[in-house]
Length: 251
Image 1 (cartoon, one colour):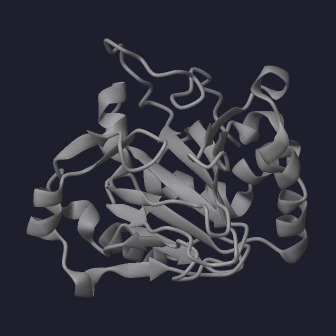
Image 2 (cartoon, helix red, strand yellow; image 1 turned 30 degrees about the horizontal axis):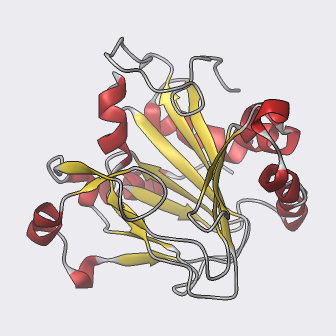
């Protein structure tokens, strides 16, 4: 289903838009049926990169859109690609994809950051967006994402590398920048049901807390880059699993 002009305007004003029940129950079941294999696989055999929590639980699985047919199909879903093309006003390729997992009681925090806070160092301009599909219920207790509507229009917030909080090196907003810009009453939790999807701008600050719940929280995120926004050479290019060197236009 396409977006109305009002929905597109809402996305541009708030920096995100949530579409409820974008996927059917059968589509969600097909994706979830692949999750055990994605979590239990091995990079040497299946080509997908995995990051783990300090506990050993899987935190992220990259590149399912290349190697797992249901996720490849999801990345080309008409109800996703139509809005992506309208937002970018161009064709797109996949910058990367990742299954983010927060296992019950083990899933840890994602500190406040903007995605472009990472990607500005990869030689691209901010002509990018992410689509996050919920595979489980997202609640205030199992580590749902938090956003601030309209914050994608803030000046670029100062980021720094955090290597202590979790097992994953996070490029996150500095505490002084957060104190200067972020108010408690402006924070909105992104809760929902399996099959809901959120489209969000690469400059939208977001984060999430620990999973304090017995419910796991799994989401699949697909990052789309304007097909004319391929990375320029940089001094220390990151690997292909996070900055694609494949530029196939999705369609």
